[in-house]
Image (cartoon, rainbow, N blue to C red):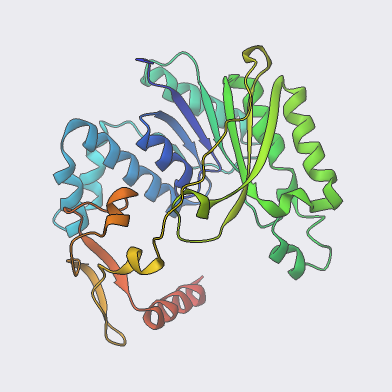
Length: 296
């Protein structure tokens, strides 16, 4: 267990999955993500974990407070950027493979241990299908899992985690989910899945997701058992430290209203050193989003 386990994050988004793996000490070798704004978030959080490991978190806080700009923050990764800003497609697979191998060489890593990720969920979600006249059957995102499998075959990790919305189970009358599992099995992996609810793990929201775990056939593993966490925390325990805002008011950088609640500390969401940023009233936020959409 002294070896740091290496991870590739596919369809990384802004890094929700990889944050959890960072917290457990895994080594993120590459994030693959097509959205450039999400990629900026991925790099910023990667730098946070690099600085934390070195005991230099104050540099990250300086960035949050605005006393250090983004370009200066980026210099703290020693020219190594694990974020691969490329859309996963047939045409780009060779470039993605080349970029991952380059990252492995820089980090002196010979093998990838774990893959994590899940293709964009719009094609599988019940809401998406309700809005589409063809029930999302012709959406090319239905087949993005095949690229996941193609990269599994290339790098042969020991284990992978595939996450998606529960609607994927019924897409195509269940045929799509059968195909997904068959593809993974044909690539040499045993697979099993559960529908897990985030509210069973200290998240103050009912949020169900399909979590499929696969492992190389030789490992003879099984799906782990997860204990549900029982608690009495409410949403107010998450928001209690936020200062009230007047209509139209925004706090870009400021202070929390109180010390972190027991819930915030237990879940690692806050420490007593954290800085309040981007605190926006809902009415103000909706106007900002509307303006952004009009500019696109």
